[in-house]
Length: 134
Image (tube, rainbow, N blue to C red):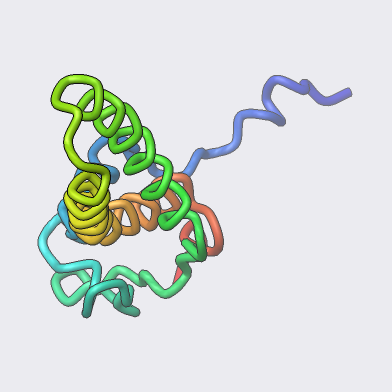
């Protein structure tokens, strides 16, 4: 009869801290070393880190970063729009112009950061092939 507690004690893969990986991804850096850039253009993820040669081609961010970015911008812009309208009662055309520009600017600033964090989260949780040995 085998002891189930001993059978379940298999060597665990090296721990990858989620917080550190997310911070590095948010900054646009490799989640492994924090040195090399994770993106090669605005939203294209590099195949490998130029510093540590960590494979990054496994990522499957797809539409997730866009959804999260829309969620964040919507939750910031909506209450701000209501507050500005109640406080100052500006002309609606001015409100539309100002909040459109601010929303687009915030979206363009957030999108690569959220994508980097998504890739880093996948790397830290060993998702989509990030856990396989090369």
